[in-house]
Amino acid sequence: MPEMTFRVRWPDGKESDCYSPSLVIREHFTPGQTYSVSDFLQKSAVALTEASERVRAQYGFPCSRALGQLQAIRQTGAQFHALSGTKVSILSFKF
Image 1 (spheres, one colour):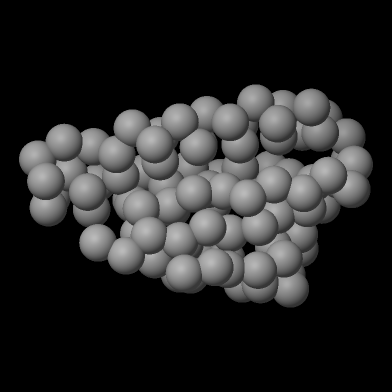
Image 2 (cartoon, rainbow, N blue to C red):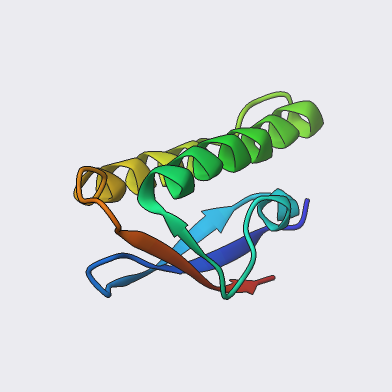
């Protein structure tokens, strides 16, 4: 199963590399685009859950690394969620 990372810039300017065990991220995000924090969190949940389920379908168990990445995204995003107008940028995809 092809895995990928997607690089994001948080509202405070910090950048993170996020892991996905599947290329499904490309169906939910576009490099160069910005998303509100709430939209980014929602899209991340859908995409990484779907990626984990693809692993389950192929190997019989969910991807704990994808679910851990989702938890990390939620924790970081919680810092900015209440701030109006905050954006997360998708900087790049790496395959």
